[in-house]
Amino acid sequence: MSEEQKESLWRSWWRQLQTDRGGRAELRRCGNVAEAAFVEPYHLLRRMKGNPEGELDLQRLALIAAALAHVEEDHAQGGSLAAAMASPAGEKPIVSDSRFRQMLRTEEREFDDRLRELVRALRQLKGQANVDKLATDLWWWNEKTRRRWALDYYERAAPEKKSKDS
Image (cartoon, rainbow, N blue to C red):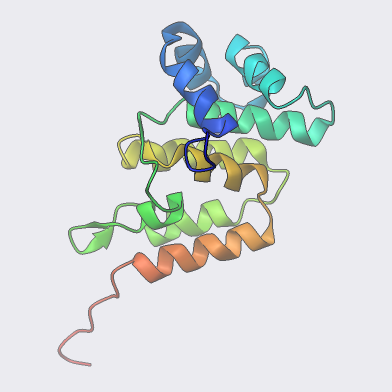
């Protein structure tokens, strides 16, 4: 199997989740990452990832599991979630600049806040995201990731129109 044909761990788990309606529904109802740890599909993802034991890794996996449960359609060839959030909806981006900045402000260990913002954004995007890129970005969430998301968002966002009086 070539590198291009290999399916990522994230995408493989997400595909399995699509056939587990009950598990997916349970993950979608999780209001925080701690709740995701009590749902069987999270443990499948943990096993697939090699059974990490560190608290930070376990929380990252719970965040990814809960967030990916809200992805309805995998845009495998799509860019980052930030670029999708900046897609135009009329004259404005789908996800507002202020909501986007609120997500970027979440620090590495603010999993519950990031989950809340991700769920809102995924709802606005009608559940469309690149599963692999989203999971990878959430796993490695740090200053570099946030900077790249800012570049992706603002490069795609439509520039504000100047008033004629200016």
